[in-house]
Image (tube, rainbow, N blue to C red; front, side, top):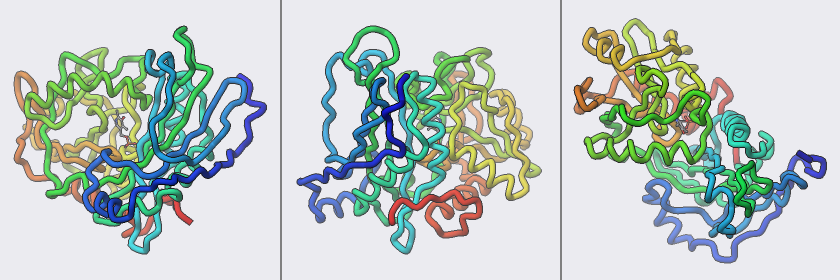
Length: 369
Ligand SMILES: *Cc1c(COP(=O)(O)O)cnc(C)c1O
């Protein structure tokens, strides 16, 4: 691979839109943004070819991509993505949370999907560029944010099966409302026994679209059974709990202990997961990363050893889990109250993200100014 002509770090050309959404319309959207429905005026784009490396970094008007129908992403799914948020603080400044973690994970995902790596520095700069261009799109309401979606696709027109030699990196941004608008409520989750999300040596640890495509059918099964999310077991033994379709899982035990499935290579390493482990340890909890079975969960609930269960990820932060449903039995109860530690960790994490408490771990990175 030739990287010689690549300049480092990349300089971004500005190509501002001539048709930004009108202020009144934007304010209307920001008052009730929902999730992933509305997009800002601009996007970041960077091209990569095997001969020229990364080049033509730019901020351009948001709009459809032109893709040749033979583009490899459309046939072989060579795609990765990230998800993180820009938070507006009370003084108007805009920050994001541990973006270096996302940048590094994006590099690991790229390696697994045989895509070129983008430097951490260029990834971070792309976040600053989109945020600066669309700063007025960062909402300021409670628990609102501007969701940033970096992604990379193989866009070489070639049907041969090999890593593409032409790739595009993009960042789009979408204002996001409070995930739980009517207060945080425990969800019921469905245990998928027929389908798995990832196998040994597969792409489970990479954030790639294909993993999500594979989780949609089990997700439908969950919905048919009245559940908000699906829980996956490991493919090898079918005994160990891995994670939800897009969130990691934690078990709060009595006596200041917390358990979460250990990273096996088929579990996605969440930034929220890592942050919760740190915050719990700061509070004097012992955090065990080890295999957990459904039987452990059932027995732990019966004996009172497990007191709370929650899921976590960037979009919802922390979601209490009230109940696990399976085709044969259920654990817990759908109308349980959210656990005290669950809610307290949720509060602490969001307090850090929104600048309401001291950022003692230096997790925040300023995106404006
Ligand atoms: C993104 C993702 C998570 C959560 O990761 P965060 O970095 O905490 O947002 C968990 N599981 C899967 C499968 C994911 O794709």
